[in-house]
Figure 1 (cartoon, rainbow, N blue to C red):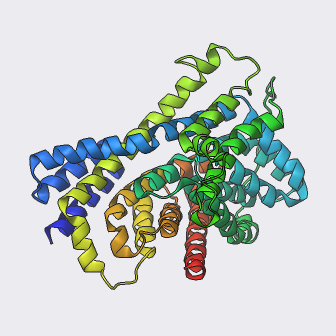
Figure 2: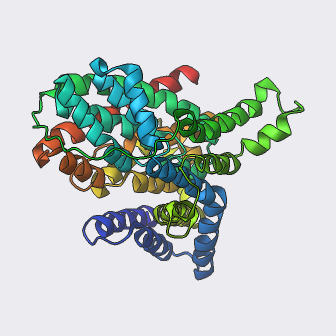
Figure 3: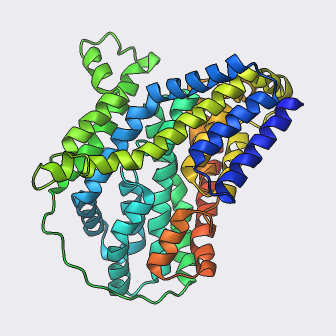
Length: 440
């Protein structure tokens, strides 16, 4: 009983600390983990060991991966490569299908670029095209925002899914493959939401002209730094699939090396350096684009490390054994991580924090929940991602980015963004459930 009480206290502290007291999530997670250790009666030596090993093991797995993923996105954004991809996507799909165009552009951009940054990049184009096509600005905004959110929470190299996969021991290539499929399928209902429901919200469009960027990278170079790492990671997953028996192939050592996520993403960073018009200190200096990447990645890496500490504390306290006994024979499976992530997302606002915290809590429970085999680990990561979309409202920074840039009031933001993320999360979880029923 003390374990459950300690966990409830820790979760309450995490939510109140982040939402009410505005403490940085890293310190909240760290203090909650330590408090949990003391409440459950762990030895001081075990608490210190959990802090050190929990942080160190997670950093060894995904610290560099998160940084490299952020670096690719930052350079893609600042070089203008993201806008080049967006513009070509719009031309490819066509202005007549502007909702689909905005949704698919957001879907692609949010894989390397943070959702709020990508929305800022795309909003002026979204506004101009909505005005030109004479369609509802709210509808196209919903399509863009939901496209961005879908891959933000379910497709690496976005930091949240990378962190969750590392904490749960899920194979990254499998998460990418299934994440792309499930996030795409979940957008079907979101498309109808954007065109039939969100489009009824009326927002005036105010066009502000701005000078075009002087330098625009080539499309093939812009895509290269995204596509190559993903292809390498997925290729390694295919070669590692036991039934295919490809590990004896003479090319396997090369595939295994270059397909390792940390190496493939490093290659992506190197390829992204082809995008700037000139490779100088504005790109690689401590105050340049790579320096900005460090500033963006550092809090995410620390939060992920603190989540690792929390998970290690739960594991070492004996909580896993208790959960195994309690949940034995129950069939709650993937719905537990989904609902926990949804609760954390709704109460504290950050999808990344919800992903990391939920993965840390669920990790010791995987055998009891019947989620320990490789496929179910992948589905657990995606179920947590689906939960971490439900729902975006006034305590989510992305909610305010969206409403302030488009001129929506809070009520309109709830009608477009809050209801839209509920549609996305529930759709994704429904698809995940049916896929597991078919595959298993």
